[in-house]
Length: 91
Image 1 (spheres, rainbow, N blue to C red):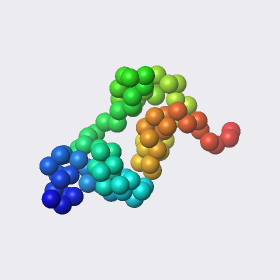
Image 2: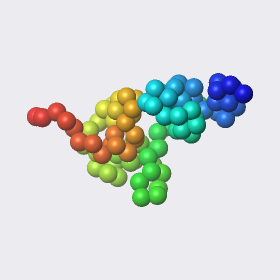
Image 3: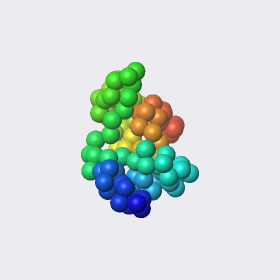
């Protein structure tokens, strides 16, 4: 069975799979880390509880805006790292 068919059967995002492959994960690791296809919401697990990204930002006292967090995730940060890393620009 080829990768694309396997991803489609499991309902995984092909784009997400290849992002993880590009980061250096093995085929199986990339498959496991790939997000579900058409998942619109990003969830973060904090102390064993899964929160949508906006609620998680409130729980940890996130210092940056939602768009910044989503850009960080898009460019490869884990959701937890994206909401806990402080703003790097000095004011």
